[in-house]
Length: 159
Image (cartoon, rainbow, N blue to C red; front, side, top):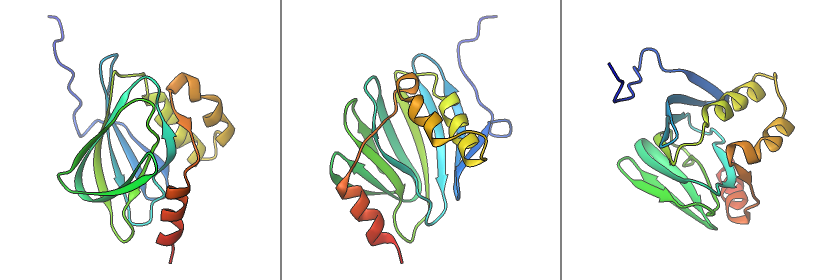
């Protein structure tokens, strides 16, 4: 019988801790679609400013509040909100100050991204370096960028 659907069971989904208070649960990683969930404790740093050249990344906030940088504008999304970021647009995300966030994240087309998340987990565990992440930019289409708006937002969120 040919498999016509991809099923990932919650009980067996791989979870990667990529930072303090941040867990990425891997759901599907095909040529068409890459999906995961991300859960952030209050104060988690989230993802720094970056952009993708080949894929649209989309976010659906399922719980809490998520701050999201889009170009140089910081927006706050609440549970139920959705946003799609086209290729080439700088973005970053983290739980809004004083809040937690749970988010469904996807990329289309997919891009064999699970190994990128695993690399983040290895860096957090001290088994790889930030340079390894920088060196993987072309492979995983994750290009880091500066953002005065995001830097200012994160500083103003500190106690």
